View 1 (cartoon, rainbow, N blue to C red):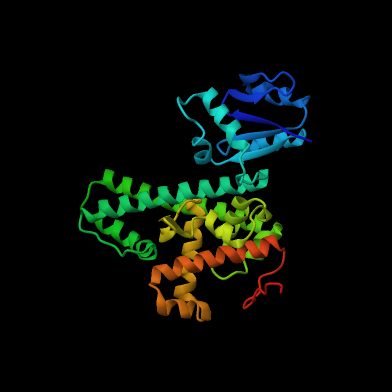
View 2 (cartoon, rainbow, N blue to C red; view 1 turned 90 degrees about the horizontal axis):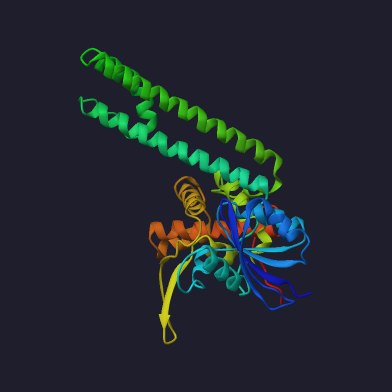
Length: 339
């Protein structure tokens, strides 16, 4: 059965639809209010619905899939190529209608639980960034009065009570109270971040996929939960190489006339997940007693940072293999291609 392509430009209150009526051949480009969108598609024949992968897209994709339609979430940069002239809701819906008919890889539709886990990661990241700002601000203010502490947080935690006691003898009480309030705020942020991580550990206990990839060296709590939540269905990727490219861990290519030049990594994927994988690879390189012969051989030929990124790419491929083939991680496993 041929599905009718439909492009939907989703918004906060009004959605813009673009499609061609199969019976009359009329080009339809009309707005539909948010509360009437599901009603509009409830009695229609199954359609191929395209939407940009933006805020609210996964929710609408799940709801439209429940009533029998096939939904493709498209990267915004892919849709942009089909918007030729002015940018408005009608033109965006038309561009999505063109893009959904092209042979491209859609964004995996996430479940509510996966989105909830990503929300926890965003909340934690905001708290971490705010905590870093508070720590740097406190260090800077104390340095203005001649009190300098160690660079690491552990040194600051042990030194801050004595530092505040010393400056209290010679600085105004209003400033000392403000500094103490800021230090208490940092400790409250520590507790809030710890609370979010405890909720992540609870999800790890109940999710077999998170537990499976947590056995991989360099994959900790944050990397495991973020990867499972962000990847969606692992079988949506054809191979581990494709998953690594989706994360931006492969070289960027330019070429002409049959000559191909390789540059630094493309960085086209999600920056947060890519950062977690690279930090995990750096931890393996720094702390592991035996990172493996593959890493040892690569270290002889490439620089430290190149080896770290290569190991992060390998970790991404292993994660895909564990999830896509539904088998536990085995150290030293060698894949054998069929004859």
